[in-house]
Amino acid sequence: MTRVAELVGAEAAGEMHRVIAEAFGARPVLDPPAEALAETPESLAVALAAGSGIVVREDGEALGSLVLERNGDTVTLRRVGVLPRMQGSGVAGELVAAAEAHARAQGATGMQVVARVELPASVAFWEHNGFVRSGREGEKLSMTKVFPRTFTMATPEDAHAFGERLAGLLRAGDLVILAGELGAGKTTFTKGIGAGLGVRGDVASPTFVIARVHPSLVGGPGLVHVDAYRLGSIDELDELDLEMTMAGAVTVVEWGAGLAEGLAEDRLEIDIVRTLGDVASIEDTDERQVVIRPVGARWLDVDWSGLAAYGREAQGAPDGGTA
Image (cartoon, rainbow, N blue to C red; front, side, top):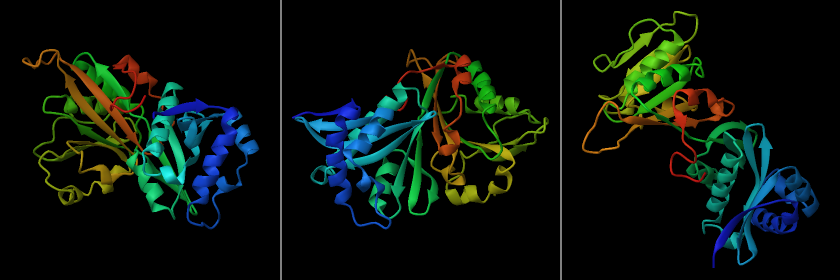
């Protein structure tokens, strides 16, 4: 028996209604009730005609389904349901993976979904699949996933130009967390950000002072450059009182993975990785791959196309996910 996730339209309204009625009917009683329980085959047909849907089938039977609704550059997932007897079998994950594949293929920058705060297991599922909390209205919790992007830079010098171009997308309060091995180009990348922001002073590795502040020379946000290489805990990072300077600056934390994420709900997590042609020889001419993982709704409407002039963008999912 093989399960297949398929893109569907209004013709699937009947079987999707059966899934939704069973899935949402088996949930705990909520106040107010889930809006999905008011759906009919006719209302679903209208929604599917305006957008599309995903159905996971096995031997012709629909086991799970969702509705895809396009809103600008974002795809909203609605009426996500799995038959009660199939919950915990991976069907929900297959639905989300198929939805992401379709959204990426259509050029969307990310996905959104609404979860109920009274259902912590549901919230945990979306977090496990890369969604983060981006807002709340009453019992409804908005959750967002912005798709990662991968760019390949031919030379180390491109890291500076790439960072300079990225600076044009940044604003005061933004947090950038840089990861990569020694010599990958993190500081060169940060120099480019500083040049793009037009800040004062030479942007260099702050290893011995841990953090440096570079005020703006052009009336824009300054740059706070942090090297967390020698920091052993989040408590040591907290002692820097970065929150005091973040509101008026772009904060870049090298070696910050696993330490700096708590500084901001919305952030860019960037990995710079050497792509070696000859593993026996590490030269400065090696290509670099830059993987940008935007976290939070702040990045949903960002136009990343301008970065392609400084590093070609890879096709597909940069992190090995569905694309």
